[in-house]
Image 1 (spheres, one colour):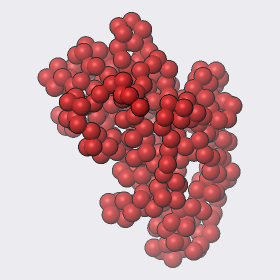
Image 2 (image 1 turned 120 degrees about the horizontal axis):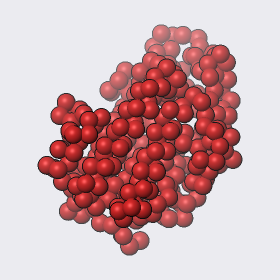
Image 3 (image 1 turned 90 degrees about the vertical axis):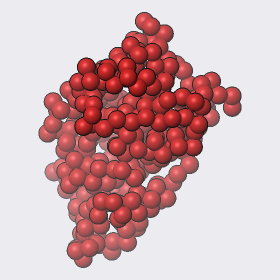
Image 4 (image 1 turned 30 degrees about the horizontal axis):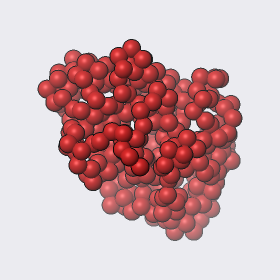
Length: 313
């Protein structure tokens, strides 16, 4: 495939380089002929417009990957709504506007599958955006991520900026957050199952009924898709990134148990929220463009657990 945009010789700023997605993008860019630049929170608070603009003016990146965000699972979203909408709105606004002001050649903003309506037809295609009410358990984060899409479209329309958006599905892998209450489903199950095995427990707790169906993408696969989009895509519409394959939370739990070697059973807690019943991305647009996820859930979980044992356990 002929590259529409070359990364060779470019200075690429990965905003949020210490997070799970940002660190995966940094790893992926190591095989490109580009210079990766990063900046830590102690040097630049991305929620401060003046600090972001000063750093951008001094550093002059050619490309920006906007992976910085305040993220978390259902519990975090429900208990910290102000943090989730404020932090994410301000971070994306500051970076996108500063990218415009400093003449960045290309920007890619990261969103989330939670941008789609709660009752969206499955699998969820890109044109389902803003067609119905959001899932209440994560609407604050979703509103901020929808705003990022619209910001990219607005700067493209008014200024001709080559700003694009990608919407990944549920992610897991190296660098994931294993916080006891703020983690996402895969990380939470890995941590709980590992601790249950270590304690020789008979059961491992699983939030909800186990019936909701979700799609899970290994984070290094996402990073590869993002580099692919930077090189080949320039359009106003956002692009879904995922596997297109659904697994129930029970099936995910069974896969985690197999990976870790836990011999006990599950203790589902139906008092905890399930969220949307089904959430799977329609990834046909990206597949037709020439990219498809190849990492299986089993292989991805093995790599994620290996990272957990070395870095988080």
